[in-house]
Length: 280
Image (cartoon, one colour):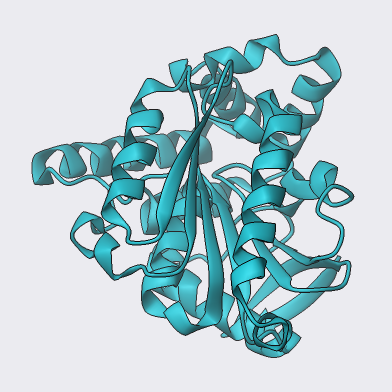
């Protein structure tokens, strides 16, 4: 891992491999370590696994406004500049998928592919978005008040993660360890600054994303399977793939299928690109 300072925040970043750049963005409560099991499978790419602000070993500013989506996107563009990466494929899971969508819209010239796993362009209904904002604030306050242990137990009990109970014991323990390693202030402020309730919905702008895109979801996660299909239909060069027998986190529940989907998608995208364009 390397510490990279951008825009007044220190990001924890792991850069491995050689070849076209692949920017890896984890979900809420995760870290760049989310993607370690896939690095050998995706050999031939320069994998850039970053701990997003407030997560893992990255900085956790005291001001929730510093976590806003537009600031996070600015940090990622600055990180790419610092690493000398002109263009990358972006893979984002859940919260990381929302970040990847914002990156694709804010800096489309910096991406050669976009992959979204269990992601959403945001909540369209203003009343539902307001209710989610209040729910996120209540959860943020509970994290600060009750500590990480109580929060992680509450988080793991959410219905969206029910299918993860079938994971091997060692996998569940490692996932819990990753979640517990986060800083409570960082997670709380991440909810306040870039939670789904704070994010402006992007549904009306999906048609602007012309880069090749893949929306992945698990068939047991009916909400996000429907979202994946709907997003793919709204983007000019996108398709959806639904993994059988998986819930919200396909990369955890069907890792081999997920790795194959991603490898095939990336190789397909590269076949359409001039090598010098993705290696710059």
